[in-house]
Length: 318
Image (cartoon, rainbow, N blue to C red; front, side, top):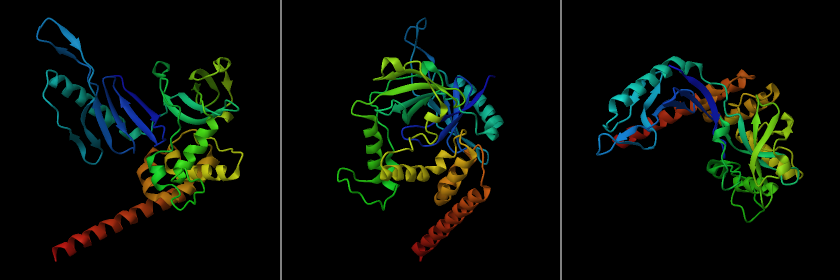
């Protein structure tokens, strides 16, 4: 059975990467390298009242179950249907592939088509909005707005002193300065990136005609998925702090230079639980000592939480 193993970034906001095992009619997906969810694409032909007529319906993917190497498959409840036996067969075939290929995760990135929000003044890539694996999947978003994400607004630089009364958090301010740099009428362009080398511009939104088909050097595409060079030092410092805060997720990227990766690894030590969650998807480690320190701290935190929880239960029973 043909099987395709690949990765695709989770974007706007950036939340890491999906590693996918696909057999065509079904996919298994993991975001941590350990726990897999198995889905079957539900677009079977369904019978009508007339047995000689059939029509095709599109339904959400069927969740076949969850799997990890320690506990095996935990089946999801399935509603009996006309295609129940076929669903079972596809699910079992996918499970065979997961058991065979899961240990080889992480996989190469396949999402070579990237949608970049453009700098209003230079028309150069400012922040990554989306990515797809095939040109046929290219889409035109309704809103060209870069998002730091809800977790960023809730957790990033909580002690940050805001002078802008129109923003309620450092995350809000980050959104504001990046989207302002894109202008009142933002534009975005899709680029095909060949192994993250030169970018060939294709279609876009609110895009000047002369930009279609252009080629840009790899150095013009921000390695950390958002522009790091800013005119005003406070803005540049804020973006740099955001990149450090996002470091446990950025380490899943496979095109970082070793020096960049090591800086992120050192910063990621501050976020031990996230490193513990994501480290199996890191394609490379430069400073193993830093990563090990984060993993040990995460283990100690979980142990302390378990002891505290056990003590609370004991007190409740007295």
